[in-house]
Structure formats: structure tokens, C-alpha cells
Image (tube, rainbow, N blue to C red; front, side):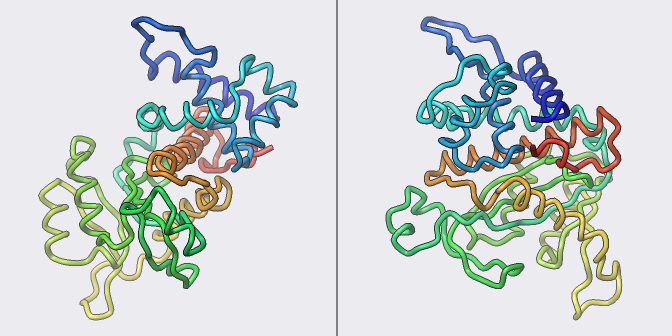
Length: 296
């Protein structure tokens, strides 16, 4: 484990413990692994590239540096249950980290959807606990069909998540993003620019975003008069964010088999990316979404 990763984890733990986690009250035993330690441990798992929770717990037991940071470690089963139960806390922490970053105040937001595969065989689809929530969709970047969910992300230019959700692949992109913006409308500032792709064309969606105070910016379709051009260079930003989630943070290898499990593991990866971006802002690293210093 590098010193950069140790510093990030320490600062993240202090942030969560001081500003996110509320003191436990009521009767009963207090957990030996606190909520702040749990979330910090979950972020370390993702940054170090451990998709298997069993391998991760075994690795921490054998690593002196990590054991010094986490004196008590639960078993794999307890760790899995604690992370799934901390879904709300994960979401709360993602927004707390985002609010502390300068990019939270950016005038430009970017939105896109990316597949989150949840099964690779017909038998998995039949037995999965995601039945009724996941479905078949088409991944254009890989030119293949998949079974799972779609991650919709509204983020700042550096990739810092502002809003996000998971949805069935058959639901239209405009409908999902409209619902997402309506849910988090209190985060929208007047004059905010939302950069989207061609799939978000249409008068209804444009009118909806305008009524929210958003200025929609998207590439022109072939059957439209020239407005914005193809926006190829700018659109590459969101593609690179998705690639960070898939390539470095293992989004497509999440391993979730239930709705709560998938949601928690996607949240875990978004928090890891948010923490990396936030820490890069505080340390003055130029490439804000670079996670190279934390992946070993």
C-alpha cells in the first residue's frame, strides 16, 4: 500500500466520522468496526482492485499496513451484510465528498448512461434475485446484448458524481434522466449547462430541462440544422469517466446478485472515484481523476 493511498484513506475516514456518520444511540452493542471504518475499508477494496470480498478480507489480514488502519476485521459474510446495509450511508458520503470539491460549483454538467451487466448466462437470469428489476439491453460500445441494469450518471467535468441512479435498460434515457433531475432538482442552479448525447433530443425533454433552469447542450442530429456541431471532443469527457468506472474500478465485475447488492457495489465504486478526485483536488494533482497513485 502506497503512502498516497494511506493518506487518502485516513482523510476519508476523518471526513466520514466527523461530517457524515451520526453517533449511534439506543440499546445494544456497538460494532467493533465503526461505520466510518467500514466505508473506508470498502473504498480501499475498490481502489486496490479486489472484486472478491473473500479475497479482500484475506488480503487485509495478511497486510500489516492495512491491519494497522483496521484493527478489527469482520468475516466475509458479515462484511458483505454491513456494506449492503450501508447503502444510504454510501450515497450520503458520495454527496458529502462532492460538496467539498471545487468541481461541485462547475457550471457544466455531463450526463450519460452505461451498462451494468449482472448475468452472463440464461440460467443465471432465471435464478437471479434481480428478476423484475434487470433486463436485456444493447451495449453499443461493445456491439453486444447484455442482461442487467443501466447506470445513469450526472457528473461534473472532472467526473465528480452529482446525481446518479440505476434503471431497467428498456426504460428510455430521457424518461430516466428527467426523473433523476426532478428528484434532485434542488441541486440545479439557474443557468446550469447539461451536456448530453444525441439520444436526449426532442422538444419535450428540451422544454423540461429549460423549465428546471438547465441549458441543454447536445450534438446535432443529421436531420437537424447546425446548432452545436458534433461536440466530439467534449463528449469524450463522459466516455472517459465511464472507462474509469469500468477499467480501474471494476464496475462490470461488481458481482452483485440482488438489488441491494448491486446498488451497494455500484455506490462503493462511485465513492472510490469521488474520494480519489476529492483527494487530488486537496493535494493539487493536475489530473483530477487519476487513481494510479492509489491502486497498489
